[in-house]
Image 1 (cartoon, rainbow, N blue to C red):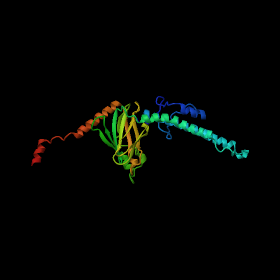
Image 2: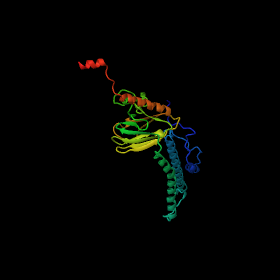
Image 3: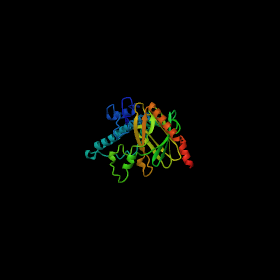
Length: 304
């Protein structure tokens, strides 16, 4: 199975409203591809879910609006500093100390900008909270310092803990003598990853057994707190064709070993996921089956 890290293509590129880019392009004269994916370690990842792409598109729109505002404001400031310097004989105007018209204008313009930006932001927020019509529900319980995954719709009994992989755990110990650079996916690997199907709306029910944690996978555009005594909901749908391994971490400082509870999600095709579910059910039945009766010879020996 190939490892996917949020590849970008023409079909997955966000195509949000162009008003934000148009505003900045008019101010800067930038090229028309200003909204293209720039995920290079300094920006949000484009991700492999529709939710992550919408978040990325909203982020870029707001970013370019802020760039346009900065260019306009600092442009006027720099122009005033250069044009009206004292060395050119500029004389300050001491009579105009108040203008109601100017104050109204510079109050209305920011309000309009905020309202315009709030409309697409509200749409994305409402979509992030819409967990209706989910096809797979998984209960995620956080512990110090591991995750428990309980599959609620895929059959009873699929319930396991996911902890830091042994090689990473050994390497992180003081005086272990192991070079972390030699450990694959150091501190980002687990013994049992969460397995989900692609093209399926997955709903997570998040809670915690002890302190506040946070489940976070950047490529999914998914992050939500796990709070003791409270159940949070989170959903995502990985695009078909984007199967692979995706990694995340606990994003809330939860104690001494906060940095050692990674998240690994194994995204499989729906058919491969069904096979995995059947394997897990078989393993659960075998573990729950009663021990067979001992042979008669063993029973006779036990009576003497």
